Image (cartoon, rainbow, N blue to C red; front, side, top):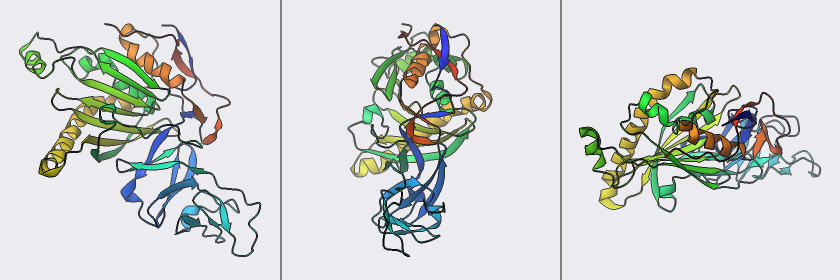
Length: 354
């Protein structure tokens, strides 16, 4: 496993092109505007009178006034400074002091969707993938609630690999099972890691746990854009699902939002069971997050001596390196130069230990 330089992984000067969470849907009411700075870009989000959410570059092309100070009219937004009006695609449709609007540059607008109670934005001209989902629930109606917003002291890529770091589950979390991760690449932006190890029968505890699994211990990680991941755990008869959506900051930190999600059950059964399952999912997430908080606070990631147990991590890095990137703040432009390259690992396939 030779070491070379990375261009994407843990590099704050670029972002992988994909969906990133922006804000909670409930925080953007009808005809409301919000100014946000995301992935190096100043943006304005607004909800139109029809209830749709739009996002575009924040500043009016006339004199640079911030559009979040303006007003929403139908599906359009009007600048406060000189009352120029722009449609939802960023085109100027009215200049009050003159009839002609020819030559006014279009404001760049960006793909936006709402799911899981969040507004998501694609940091490029056209979305190429769906909003991240849990593979097991891909074609299933779901219900979800949001956990707390959080900030961690390291890059999202580093947070993501923590969940496939099989060594730390015994050293930090004292898990009584030695995990082994199988890797499946679904597409250029989506990679899945699944545990293949069965629960050992050595102790009374593991014999009891093993009764709830016909096959391997359920532990499945699904990663999108190297920054949003879902975790699936639980016995064969009941799985718990958690999505961790992260976005990087200019100083290399992670701004995160937890999503607790489960299969939607209808009727009286669903009315009582869905909230209980979401509550238990929150407890599962809190348990594992608690042990890792100190690590994220002080880590300065460098894998100087990779070993075979790091195979899943290396596969993640390799997958991240192959994804399309945007220069920080320049979402519609291909990456040209990379500053401060990071360490990387050879791109040949690394097989997980069996």
